[in-house]
Amino acid sequence: MYDGIVQDLIDEFGRLPGIGPKSAQRITFHILQTPAFDVSRLSQLLAEVREKVRFCEICGNVSEQDRCSICRDPRRNPQVICVVEDAKDVAAIERTREFRGLYHVLGGAISPIDGVGPDDLRVAELMTRLADGTVQEVIIATNPNLEGEATATYLSRLLLSLQIRVTRLASGLPVGGDLEYADEVTLGRAFEGRRTL
Amino acid sequence: MYDGIVQDLIDEFGRLPGIGPKSAQRITFHILQTPAFDVSRLSQLLAEVREKVRFCEICGNVSEQDRCSICRDPRRNPQVICVVEDAKDVAAIERTREFRGLYHVLGGAISPIDGVGPDDLRVAELMTRLADGTVQEVIIATNPNLEGEATATYLSRLLLSLQIRVTRLASGLPVGGDLEYADEVTLGRAFEGRRTL
Image (cartoon, rainbow over all chains, first blue to last red; front, side, top):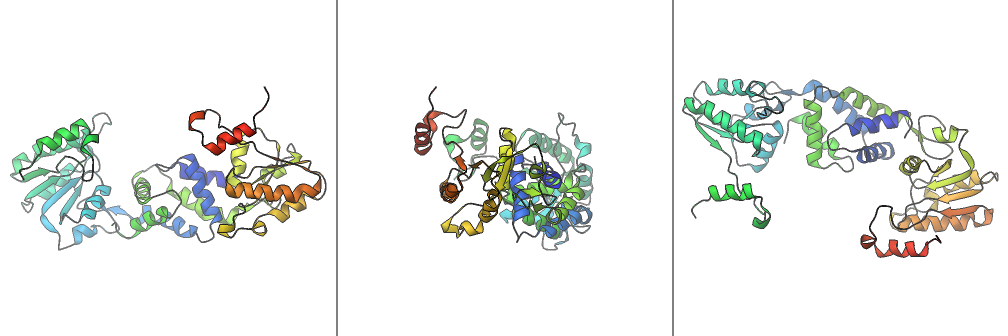
């Protein structure tokens, strides 16, 4: 619809997740028409990011160094490891400021349909980290969906022999939510996990 | 929340229109984790686009040359000019394949609140184009909102002296829409503009 490079840029933006053709067009025109928009900065960051960013050799989180800022932090408790599917989950948990231990990023969840088995995840690396006996508790924080639950079950069985406490994040009603609109499975979990007041 | 450059890239994406912090994070991780994603291409296009893309010296549409592909096309009818607010509107009208004339991009609409007057738009350029008597009809296709209507009224008065036919796109019920859900103003316009069958 547009001449050469403008359409090329719209097409490239349109390939990013969650950006449809209309948004891609809007972004491209924003870049063309906003004098203050520092397009060279975005362009340079994009060129650098794949080169500079690697994954932490210990936990698998994103990092600009061999070890991520959490694994390098001496104030974090090395006796507790929280296992997550994705580096984005690390950021989500960090925002709660509730957890002061270390993380382990699996890089996905077990999903036979997508052909993802335990060997495709960073499970062996987790076992290596647990070998020296420092870790007292593994908190499994995979997503509360089919794949996440399957992964949690698999890991809990695998860790059974190590005499380490294995826990799973609670399922239940979201805070601020409405009981009336909760789905049956969530409401069922909320009953199962009810606590004495 | 993330180390250096990853957070920088999330922040830069978050400054684009329609991209919130969650989408910016999702896009950044897509770029980090998708091997097939050609990040250098996006980076290079961004670097080139501001440099290469200019605005057509005749109509104000985006173009990589002094004159855009529509103004250069000898098959377009030079007797009809469609006046639009924005280059995105040119693309929208081109998609209908209904219009074979030329365009004139105003670069906005009259809006006293935002301090945009006729002098801030490409109105003088339009008058210059109309001076040689080639153009027989000016179709005003500004948006059907307050600013667009004000601009249409202003232009129609300005063109009154030139003995050129001035038309405005029809307002009415959108095709495929539901009469019950149409707002009062649109429904009123649909009555006003009713046609004999």
